Image 1 (cartoon, rainbow, N blue to C red):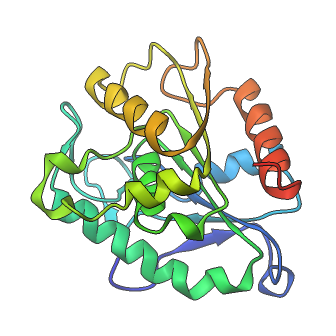
Image 2 (cartoon, helix red, strand yellow):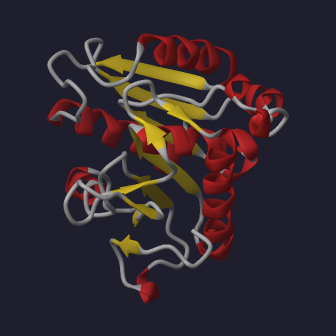
Length: 223
């Protein structure tokens, strides 16, 4: 993502100034249009910006992208590539965040890994984070991430974090879930909800809960 990323916005430029921003980060093999489908069920006071991941995937049909190369079977990846993707997202965020009253992140699956990684590098920049059917990156899995995250600063700030998933999610390995549990319990103000039958997806009840979370934590400032 060395160039400006492709972003779909819920508002025209002249209508964004001073609004709270929610950055939407899609999952592996998807694109920026995917999470825009959630927006009609979320609070209308926000501006929503859905970012396309930088790498196109071959063999998935048109419109499939990933934030960095991933071994889907084992969720194995290059820590250097993950770090580069986070840094590139920061380059874009720096250009837009000043126009908004606050910034919230919402990531699905691999997008949750991106959202939590952004949070862990500069926790003071975000008022809340939503993670759906995903995981947090374990910095011990690669040299490039050693010392990159500031979890001590995050733990001191206790940013409100909504984590929704299905206990029987067929995609995210148990080891990733275990690490994410340990990390979240140690560092964020966690709201965790399980959705039976959701699989690796988002169900209507979950969208309602995200709406309540964003309203309560961001709009009413009761984080």
